Length: 335
Ligand code: A3P
Image (tube, rainbow, N blue to C red; front, side, top):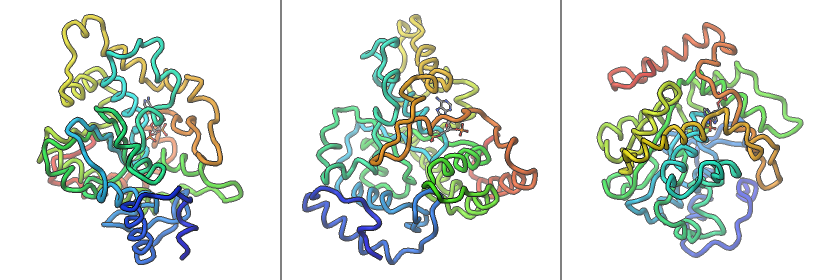
């Protein structure tokens, strides 16, 4: 397989990067492959189905990333609330810097404010972009926990991860809609039956949903100061409590003065689906040749339980059964 078909061209990477690129190019053709939902191919890499750019990003992070104790990694399996969590974390961390009425989130989509880690690790062919981000760095990832280097996961002072997951029935429905928006023109849409089958087998972007959750969940039990796991449903139900929990976890709790000024309420309002999906920057079609995903693609319904409008009773039963089996004895559940 020609690697030029897998990757877009990157401007002369530095020497260290070139070695990683070479290793990745050599590895890819040796990995099991499957058709992707919206990209051409997925590769089975260290137990997870990932597209080539994600694998290369993971290898570059392993080979070159220099973590800082202040780094915050926003981690998710796709469609679990990445956009929301990026917005919440950005506004929690930078709450003293901006007026809520003229906040950057009113002008930019959260993915512009919290860069995609495995994507920008090779921006312009070197780590200088990531190295140049001032602390505290906020980086967003879909990579499973086990794919990060031990210098990030084992060293308790290296960085922190905030993870959000969601009922897999809603994840599947959300991912199905997203995939069909992103499929190139002329390519027929994926049927729900087709994606249901792939999702249950773990053949979907960034691998088995359940294994992804378990990786972060177990890490949060072993290292509660390093990894915080949230559920989309909990944030919907109790957004104020969840925002306070995240701020405490990050070591920046809200002061009595901030509570009096209702800063937590401001953050929740700013980041709500209603507010964010109504910002011009998130309503317009921002698709371009370099960036085929539009900001508006990240906002659909933002509800808990929309699966009931799409999945058959049998599909929902099967997904619940897999969830129960996978999480049995782990202390994790979506109830
Ligand atoms: P639905 O397709 O169920 O509506 P991600 O950001 O990980 O790609 O996830 C996208 C999902 O989160 C979509 O779910 C989207 O509508 C929802 N979403 C986006 N912004 C949100 C927000 N501010 N609050 C709640 N849900 C949000």
